Structures are given as structure tokens and as C-alpha cells.
Length: 350
Image (cartoon, rainbow, N blue to C red; front, side, top):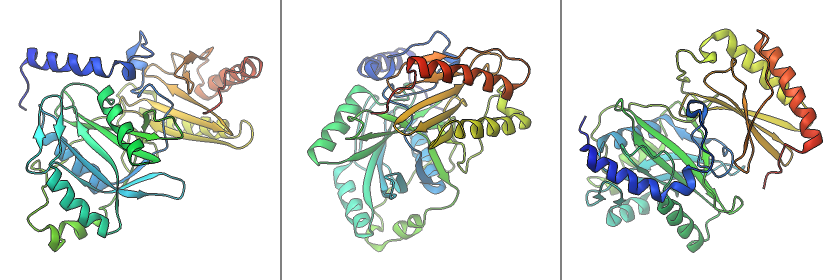
């Protein structure tokens, strides 16, 4: 795979990193192996639904440009609960300006394709672009400012921004971030929930006479996904590290027991399991207007799980592993719940 010269890549990386420092460096931890990739805004947003055809299509476009930025748009709709559903994605047009630290979409191409997609009942729900080998998995400051500016200008309630990368093994990664008025326009990292089938819109739009000879498709023939942030019930099998506790099939049943225990811990509680792009499992706990995450790091159960709150703060639970993962977790969480009742560890979700 073609790579940038080291000094050129470092310079580009440094400039882009400075722009995104407010997003990516709020809570540095000494043990980065346990730290999830996050937008450093709020906790994870609800999963983004995407068809397998579009999930793979974006991977192929990202791999087309391993050392310069590229991008495009995402089309679809929202569920009755406001969840994004991506049913059709486009990449760069023929006159797109690709550079090391930015890309500008071909406006004429976008207008032509957008006109047809809107006629078919779809709406543009977001954008995507690749930071190729810069190693930036979250939006830069410029990215955030651009999204917020567009949302306010067009009175948009929500918007999706996806950031792609090419990892050191030549695989694509793609992190989804949602923005909304309700969240104060903060970027919220969201997991993917892959619908394991072709989007019904893919063949219909690709074969539309109005777009004959217009659509630009990726040159890379096959998708190659790295670690992406996935909902646990996604159609994609989790890719755990060899030494991660959930590589043991028996421990998957233990995780289910933990989820059931947390869901029964109090009234009106929902527990959503997710796996981040490092292969680390998060449990998002929503109880009324309260929300937090339990994060099982790479060294769990020999190290304590982490609790993360909406304001970006974290705490490590008091943990004594007694040989039983489930039993140790129950003991640990009961102590946390008692402390929470006394000290208000559970923050209100804004």
C-alpha cells in the first residue's frame, strides 16, 4: 500500500491533531489500552442502522485513497425514535479536490445525484470523509464547526458525520458521530448496527436511467474492515483480541447474566451492549433521565471495570475478583449503587 513520507505525514498529522485537540484530549488516561475511542462529548449515541451493502461500499471508497482525504454523503431516513438509517451512500465525484488534510466534494456531481435521490424519497442525513493514515478517529475542530454551521443555517435538528481511516494493516475503519440540537451540537460517538443484506435502494439507484454514466463507484473491489464501533446485536461478528475475556464462549453467557442483572436493578432500566473500535465492550445504562456506561477493559476481569458519566468523567469501581466474574461484578456493583445513593454518582442526562 502506498504511504506518505514520514515527515510529510507527521506534519499533516500534527496540524490536524491541533485542530481536534479539544475533542480528543479531555480525559487522557495512563492506560490507553483500556480507553475507548470517544468524541469526548457525551456517552455513546443510539446505534446507526446501515445496510451491509453501504457499510462495505464506504470501506471500499476509504481504501481507494490510502494517503489523501476523500469523502461523500449518506442518504436515508429516521425511525420514529429518531434513529439514523443509512440506505444509500455516495463517494467523491470526478472533480473532487483530494488533499492530505481536506477534501472538497464535486458540487455539480452532488447536485445531480442529490436531485435523483430526493425524487426517490431519500434525504441527505449526513456526510463522511476519511482521515486516511492520520490516525484521527474523531472529528477535527474544523469538522465540528462546519457541521454545526450547516445545521444552524438550515435549521437541522440532527446530522450524521462519519470519520474514516486506513489502519496499519491496510483495513478501513469508520466511526459515526451524531450531532443534535438536544445535545447542544456536541459530537456523540454512535455504534453501527449492520443490517446484513443489500439495501433495496442500491440496485434501484445504481440502475436509474437519470444517473447512467454519472455515478462514481469505488475502484477497490472488496471491503476490508478493521475495528469499528459496533452494536453487539449487529450482523457483524465481534472481533475480539485473543486474550479478551469474551473470546471465551462461556463468558458470553456471563455477560448476558450481567446485562440481565443490570436491567433488573431498579425500574425502567435499559442496558445496551456495544463494542468499540478497540474491541472493548461497553454497557450503556439508561434509567429514566440518568445515564452512564460500564466499560470492560482489555484486562478485565483481573482489573476493575470502568464507569463513565455523561460529563466525560470516569471512575474505577472497587473490585475484588474472587474467581467468579458474575459474582464479583454483583458484589462490586452493589457497593457502587450504595455509594451512588449517598454521593449521587449517577449524573442526570442533559
